[in-house]
Structure formats: structure tokens, C-alpha cells
Image 1 (cartoon, protein in one colour):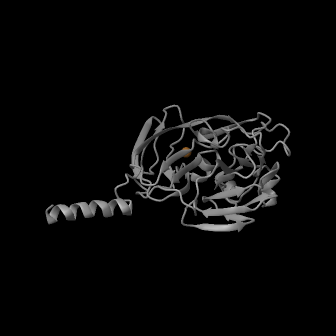
Image 2 (image 1 turned 120 degrees about the vertical axis):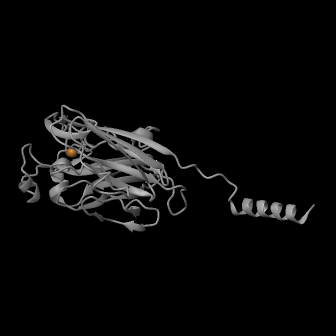
Image 3 (image 1 turned 180 degrees about the horizontal axis):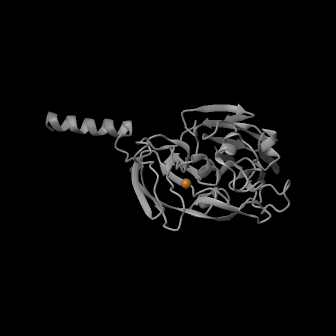
Length: 317
Ligand SMILES: [Cu+2]
């Protein structure tokens, strides 16, 4: 064998040992289309209606999920029948605020792409003028950017849930009133007060969050409030880990309460005791928010269905 061939063989063997020859998950392009809809939605467990502004007709908008390195190919449609301009501001994007995030008039649409370069959990929202009103009326959601690889420090969880908290102001609230934090009536979790808490609201749908004893449950918690930070605490539990901004690089251990400023998000891991049924109440320990709706029940029981907290069920509607 010639020396050059030997060298090539050696290089190939070294690459295999170093793991270089193992194909990595290819970065992909993920097409996402949303339609701005000014429409009535059901805003509580009593069935009351609210004149919302939404992405695709629901509060919050759909969960966007990609892997670090993927390209998001996004289109926003603003139908002619709408009265207002709308826009999209992905907190996971690094672009030009006046270009990609520009407002789109009724009857027009906008297309842009960005590479989701950083793993984490990021809010998205409409940023059209007056932004405060567009967020308050429901135009927000979450984009989860999964890391390329899970690890011991950032393990793949057994179940996952998205909880997006926001403030409900009465229909007709003026911009100045939003800015003064005046008149808000409820804390919404995924669009309704006590959405998953039949203890505090017997009319709650009953879709509590569920897991089996001993499982690792990861909660992606987003602060879509207008004015208030959130104190995220699992009553009768301790956060095994909190990943600030949802990043595998930012890990805190054994936390009781963790604060989320407005427009931020984090991933919270909880692992329930094995061998018995337990329940946690995941609250915003800011009492003015908790008692207005920011309480969510997580039941840890052998009866948890296998598909709860997986796939499309991470945001129960
Ligand atoms: Cu809008």
C-alpha cells in the first residue's frame, strides 16, 4: 500500500473514532404559514366570547417547533376583511426589524426566512402598531428551537407541555389604559383563566396536564403579559432543573420559584416521586395573577394516557 493510501485510511479511521463520519441530522427548511384573524374566541370556561386578534383564529397561536440550525420559511397572510395591519416578530430570529418584521396591510401577505441558530424557547408575537393592543388581544405564541442533540445535562423529557400566560383586559381598553396596567380582569393560561384547573374553576375542561409517577415533565412557560413578571412555582414540587430561555447552556438546579420577565420564556423540568399518585399546582405565585387564573394542575398518575404531553398534545386545546 502506498504511503498516500495509508494516510487516507488513517484519516478515515480517525474521523470514525471522533464521530465525524456519523451523519448528523440535516438542517431542514420548515415552512410555516399563519393567517391574521380578527375574530371572536371563547375566552373562559363559561363560554364567554371576546373580540380577539389572533394567528389562525386561536389564542395562543400554534406551536412552531424546529431544530437548531433549521431555516424557518414563514408567510403571514393578512386577509382583506381585516381592519388592521399585522406583523410577525419571532424572538428566535436575527433579522432586520424594519424589513422582516414590517407590518402587513389587510389584503397583503409577507414572506421571510430566518435560520434558528440558537436552541431555546422563544415567544413570537404581532408587533404592528400599537403593539400593546395586538399582544393583549391575543397575537402571540411560542417557537421551540430544539437542540441538535440531547445530553445528560439536557435530557429528552418524557412529556412536554406549553403554558403561555397573558393578561385579559376588557374589550375596548385604550392604549393608555394598557400602559397603566388598568382594568385587567384575568390571567389567561393558553387563552383561558384556570384552563387546566378544575379545582378553582369547576367548569374547566378537565384536560389537566398528566404524567406518570417518576417521569420527567418539561414545561415551556412563556410570559406574554403586557406589564407583569411571572413567578413560576410548582406547588408540592420542586423544579429539578430550570433552563433559562430554554437553552441547554443555561441550567439551574433544585429551584422553587423562577422569575420570567415580560416577553421571556424558560423550560422547567419536574420529576414526580415514584410509586404513588401526586399532583402539583403550577402557579404564578404573584397572587394577583394566580387568583385571576394562573393556576394549572399537573396530575402524576399511572392512569396518564400514553399520548398526553406528546406531539400535538403539548398544547392541550
Ligand atoms: Cu396584529
